[in-house]
Length: 484
Image (cartoon, rainbow, N blue to C red):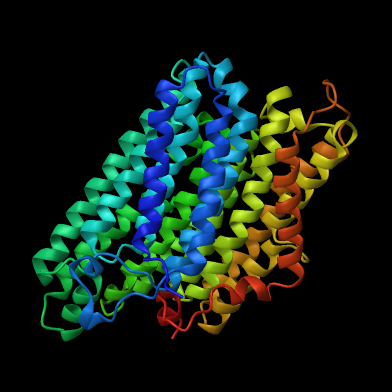
């Protein structure tokens, strides 16, 4: 059976997104939700196609394109990750559409709201396959620009516009650091391809101080993308101001792609002195700051924003231990439990609001939604029998194996902080007096999404092996090479 060339996946997603954009411009009398369903169906077809991808050509027979693009196991896994995330986010947007329209947008603009995630998805898919600094930069800009438009999409909402401007300015700043770092690396090695940069650095015939400076600049640029301390300043305001499905997309899709790029970029720089010490320091600062800053939060979106910084810290523990397998599993777990929490929040916030107090008595008004949020908070906190438990377990096992005592101590202590602020939401739903509001209506699409995420959160929390097996491939991946 002839396989599908891997680059066709991104091309299909780009064509689908542009086709929906063009068609919604002229189809003035079509219900805009049709474009959302078209995007979901199209992405599902592309997702199925990822299981029939042809193996990449051998190095000696590869053309110039393959110096930029990789179709290894890590790339294919995270292409599926990006597709699944985008499908779920577009489905959430269907229920969120009345909020966007209520913010002053015309119904005709909703077609753009449903098509832009497709372009973002294409950028994420390119990003996880990028093995050249030039291609990394171009893919990152496609993702950043798409997210900027999505964050500030409610044009007449001052909070969303403020969030969009902050995201744009700080993203431009981080891009400046990234490009400056790439310039230094190119200057010292004469290469932009990651494999060739690694070969030059391994010779030891270059100025290690200059290379380290360039590597640090690149880490600063990527630190903004993954919300690592001290580059996390944009997260809470942007998360709070953006439309809730976009916040979920930012929290999951953007973070996952950023960590995949970080795994790839770190490989050439492992030979440089003190790189691991720098990663350990950033991981410590990120996990401590994220958890402590989340403690006093009363707005659920801001709480999840600060907690996403904390989860970036746990992921950085895995990166600092060079355990790509633990990082990949944690990102997969983070996808399930974060999208579950946002799926519930979209339904509840439309009727009451985004403050934790607005969830008071939710167990009486909507017991199904309360149970789903309970499980999401339990998984985010790392309770046993949830996928979040195994995510943290693999990270801590890796830190113990590498004798990173400080990381283990900080991780265990901050997990206790997580129990406090996540269980604040549970207390509001089950123990606080019932708030005002009628029973919450749940569409069939939203119910299907929540049930699917619930089942996956519990299934992989009891039996994680299917998810671990999904990352195996006869072709070597970056995650496997980092683990060696």
